[in-house]
Image 1 (cartoon, rainbow, N blue to C red):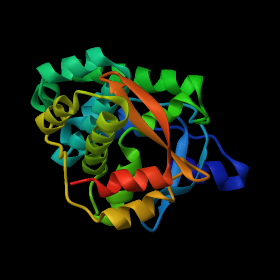
Image 2: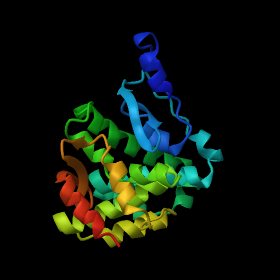
Image 3: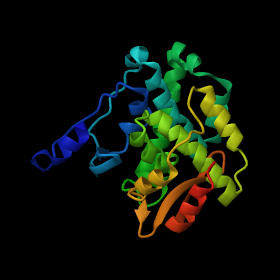
Image 4: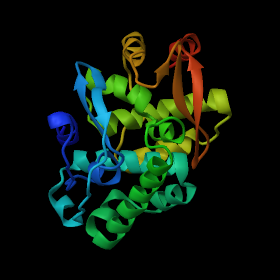
Length: 243
């Protein structure tokens, strides 16, 4: 909201962020996306405007509730799944408690993830190509987040799981169980029951929709995401197969 207000007030004023959550440090504060929700639709009103600065203080995370740690790790796992197989392996060797008790380990993790996102954003600031990969798990995730008042991390985790299932069907992705295992290792949900018809209706308002297609983010393998244009008719058929 800060970035959005700064972007529209007097045709734009300077602003910066001091992120106080893990989610903000590894994702939300980086990249210049500033938006607000409209009803159940995520970030429907907004703009892209870069902050003047980001100031990180890892000690601010000491008082985070459990849900906020999970929100952050959902995005960290997303980065690993689409861009960094080695990071994925590192996460498999640790637990959330390891990062909470070791500020050096945590700071290194935050820096690594910030660099992943910064590199993608620098190459594609207005999301015309590669930056779309950062939406892995967010297409379905955003649809169900406000429908069921889920936390962002919970919704994106479920969205990533189903995107992995879709990747099995469309890309031959063979590591869905590995992704599910990592998500649950960090206290995140995987599969969940939801109203498929309602979710598909909400999903059709997704910002990644172009004409009668949605650019869905799938996995070819762990560490390599791809942008897959899917006709709405094909996506609807896939949704109907969800158990």
